[in-house]
Image 1 (spheres, rainbow, N blue to C red):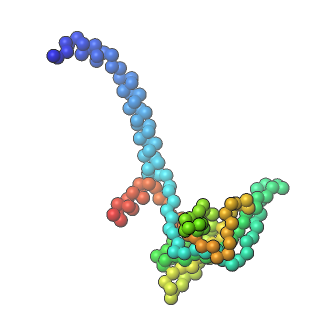
Image 2 (image 1 turned 90 degrees about the vertical axis):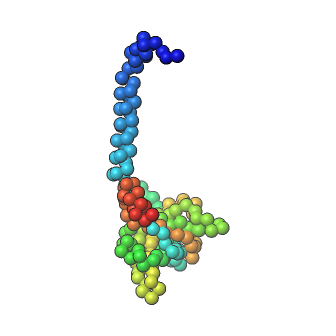
Image 3 (image 1 turned 30 degrees about the vertical axis):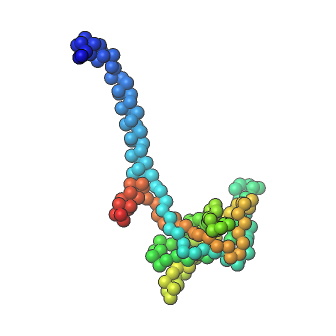
Length: 172
């Protein structure tokens, strides 16, 4: 049985546009913040090495001065990594990367910050050899030994989530 007309009018009178406007305002703010992130936030893209290995060079202890009379110390190793020739234009001196040493049973452990110091193109092997130096805190749990193997990930560019989505759609 349909409701009487007077009850529907009472229902309309009880609905205030304030609650609808508050909900729409909150949704608009959330959408605006998400759009700002989606179009303007920069996300790093990484490329992985074929192979990476700690060289025979001895570990160095490097001081980093953080103010008068204060110094932090870092362990420094030299790592040699191999990349494909497609990375030739994407690798440059001073580029940031992360070294992931292989731990037990082939799993990768925590990363160590590394910086590119030299790049050599091996034409006969069609590969690129890159030397990096690491910056590990002195009290780091990771102990790198000579000839330790792992993986290097180099930051090759920064893109917005929107650009990343477009790149994925083009490659699909």
